[in-house]
Image 1 (cartoon, rainbow, N blue to C red):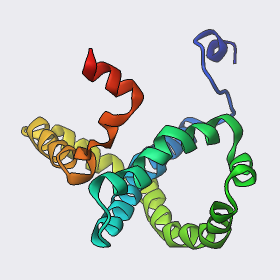
Image 2: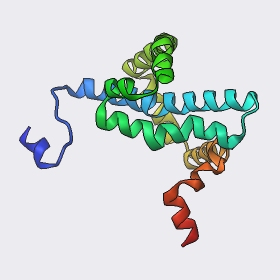
Image 3: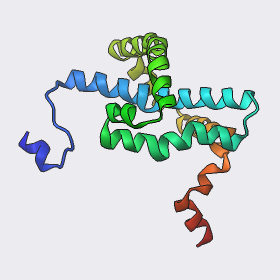
Length: 167
């Protein structure tokens, strides 16, 4: 514990190496990256299919989450968010959170089993060992970065980015 405090760890909790590996890989491949990217892409695509502009779809999908809501959740907790959002949002959370949870639970079960079995580690090691790894990775990242959702002009409208553009 003293070592953790000495190196400035933000959180200390009892775990094992095995549990840390499983939780870390599941977290990174799950909510932190895979799920978040997939959910945002799904909602953005839905809004675009129904005639919403790229800017509106991006704002409702990414901006509100990243620029306000997630910070409030981090600072105050999800219970605070539920208690302090509009009644429309409260009803939405109460009516839909269970359906979202139930829809993604099987995906998380598959992901965790893939982590525990070593399949996810093998995927990473095989990809990283390929002679053309960097080129393939760059191509995949470029495809994502050049998607309509991530090219939406909304981010340039953020106050901190307007200052940079005018400087």
